Image (cartoon, rainbow, N blue to C red):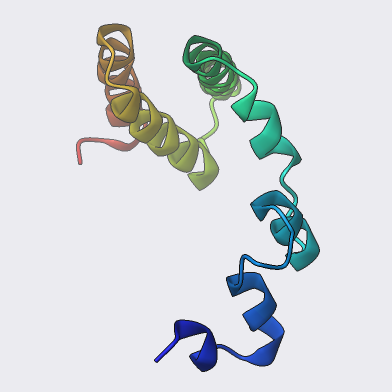
Length: 118
């Protein structure tokens, strides 16, 4: 049995490739915004890593400033800070480079100082 026979008629046209449309055109027709994907495809792997580093560095900077501000005001950081720190740890571990793994240790120390050991 052809897989397209089991698809709803609305989706069948996206399964078939003989419609003369490219994959990008089909994605756009389906309502998917592919501009970021296209922009990332134009980047070299090194440029993509540099872009990821900039985003992670900015997030670390914001988290650090937030922690410092909470210390100055003697207030307990909200749960959102925990989520930010956890997200940074996950992202840095995924990068796997020595400097990222070092940052993971620092972020875990910050998390432990703020919320106690896990």
